[in-house]
Length: 221
Image (cartoon, rainbow, N blue to C red; front, side):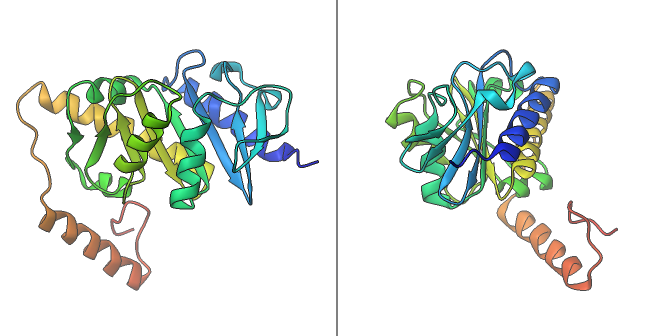
């Protein structure tokens, strides 16, 4: 039996971290990790602030439960769709307050800071559909094309990455970017980086990497 006990513990730890950072309330969110052809994912109705490994289940890529006593999250279809389309390793979905608020207003979050290039630049907002539906999953997958994060209109946010820690970091970065945009919008129209400016940042980061003198932000260490 594929229990993936260590990964289930890691998912539970990530959920408690997200709750401690104020990115989720009660059971509003879900987290998963892909391990080969298995997906380790939070159970439906699990509260993040006290989530345990027993509230994390294992399914296959078709959604069949392999391990755990509880039902997987109602957004399982979204997670499986992301894994199938992008071949990623971890997915985090939250109802983070700033991300959710920005998704109520804009059709896309402009690239207002070069750190957002870690998310792919401009963050798209998927149109609203009822939670747990195929329509929701399809719209979010479209919004995630060439991106590692998307906002979900009147709902929340989703991020995916090559590891669980990276997906959590992407979620935190998206919330920071949304807060930055919100604060700037209260004073006027925020400036955003155009395509040429974004490309210049990418080229600068690549040049630093080639000399072995870069940190994860792309700035010289």
